[in-house]
Length: 352
Image 1 (cartoon, rainbow, N blue to C red):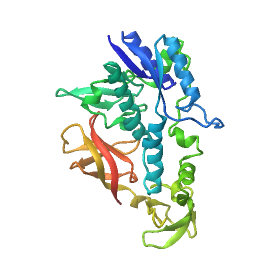
Image 2 (image 1 turned 135 degrees about the vertical axis):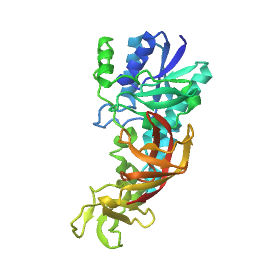
Image 3 (image 1 turned 90 degrees about the horizontal axis):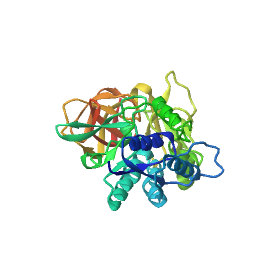
Image 4 (image 1 turned 135 degrees about the horizontal axis):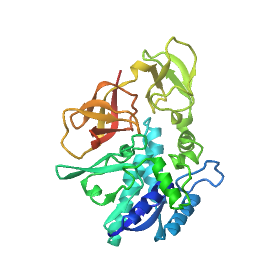
């Protein structure tokens, strides 16, 4: 077997990925990506970044007797993930920072590093699979739907998958922890890391955006579909489509109302009943397709969320039944059976 770079986050999943590869005859080289410096005063445990995570990753590598290195990507992460997130929220959109991190920072950086060192493959601890259809590789759902992470990696295509390995694709979390305990891995019982590491340590995504862009913390009106003012909000930094909490009503109505639209210029936030904020269609920006589009597909608009039947012409996704509330900036990922056909970011949404 060949050498292989393994992304070691400091958690149990990546540790067992490295263990599995070593037992299979590979020569793993552990690489920890330093993405963000966590707040030393934070009370949040098990962040995927910072000194504790780096230390845990190093201890795992020592225990597995494999080489270990740290790659400093903090500047790239700040530009491609943190700044992007702030600007998207300030523009009334709801981005997914974890997708940006995977596709603009983590995966390409690991692949470039491997290429520069002449190492043919890279592995991660994601719960996803690769399948071959008509001679082409596709990313596919992990075997355990409760752990599947394919949505977060939907942009990976043939060239990427030829060099990537996912040792945990056929496993579940209980099996991974059991293997870690049996091997004496130090992080066997470590809890899963929280998402949005940079936002959590800054007191939440709303506070992060409001601090960087103070105008997003200014209050504004809530209006119904007829344009009538029905309440106020505390700033668009803390709002997303489909939200109901954190809104202040000046009048009551028989039906519950949810955020259906955000105007970042006027700070006017539109609200509507639940049935009026479902998704009928979404126009995508920067879509990527890994194969020709079949007449019928399934769409997922949330990480590990349910799938909905759709049609797609390559730019517009049309839901064959009402989909969940979708915000501009969120990704729509299309599946044909277990494999991902492609997807893109919603730039325009038709509701109701």
